[in-house]
Amino acid sequence: MNVPRVQLRPDFDTSRIIKGNWQLADDHSTSLGGSDDMYAHMSAHVDAGITSFDCGDIYYGVEERIGTFIERFRRERGSAAAEQISVHTKYIPAFLEEEGLRTLDRRKVEAVIDRSLQRLKIERLNLVQLHWWNYDIDGCVDVALVLEDLKKAGKIHHIGGTNFNVPELAKMVDAGADIIVNQVQYSMTDRRAQNGMEEYCLANNVKLVCYGSLAGGLFSKKWLGIPDPGSPNFENVSLDKYYRIICDFGGWNLYQEMLSAMDTIAQRHGVSIPNVASRFVLEQPATAAVIQGSRHARHIADNVRTTAFSLDQGDYELLAPIFARSSGPLGDTYDLDREENRDALENISTEYFDVENGSLVTRQREAVVLAEPYGHHLNPVS
Image (cartoon, rainbow, N blue to C red):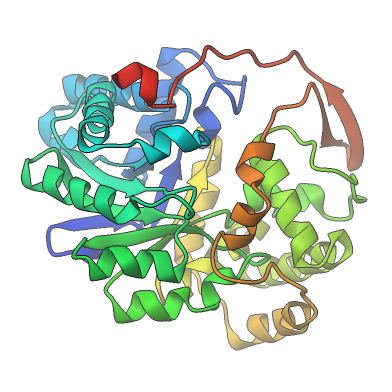
């Protein structure tokens, strides 16, 4: 089975399942294998038709890992085979550094784009998705137009946004930036894209590429029937993020009702809970693709099944009463996360919750120590 594709512009398309790579960052997971394991892992996705790879310039080590993979893939399978791989990176200027964001200029923007090109070992970035993490600081539109200039210079093919709400996305589009996608969190517990974003995108030739459809792995049978851990201390920062969304949604008990309904739907169709979760997002009107992060190629066969079935009226009727009792999250896409500064809360604890033999357990691990800075842009490119 091969993954379907969707056309974003006449000269650019994407697989409807995009390989997420945040899970491969040094500050996200310590379960990575060696270079041969990484090559096999990424090759298996390409062979399944998952040829679009998502990453970001502040994901510790990820651009380099993808670049090393593409270089070897090109060497072993040829340039034509390597050309089918499309890297969707993010440009996240001066992340959590307000003064750096205020003093951003064209030279610094171009220097970071050049660095991504060097890390990825490619001549042109397929897609650069801008994340402007502080709307109180001006400059987002100017930077989007700089990225447009870098398209004309041949360094970038297309540009998109990440975590924009409708008003801020519209500012860039109205200024003449050709934003082809907005990457947003969208799942069965986070339907904020329905609060105006879908409508705007459908009217302005912007597609949604959606992360969080699997809630970092919380949408799985593993967590069905498990009691509330009570705090966001999980194996990685993805799970912590989505636990907070579950609290916004209506709490752990309502999430468990959702999981039970998803399990019922999965059994009807002969698929898995993750398939149901991703299928729901894929069927929304502005969605081009879902981003599915994985550390192991063994998930590929199950992930690909997402594109082989459809939810029916009975499935949506089963979900409707649960959605009706949801209390959130409210507002436009990512606004709540910004208001509560949730990016700054992301941390890997030495103690975390997990499930073993159907029971909630607490595990211990060594602290993750990182060399700074990796993606904070002022020092590396000054």
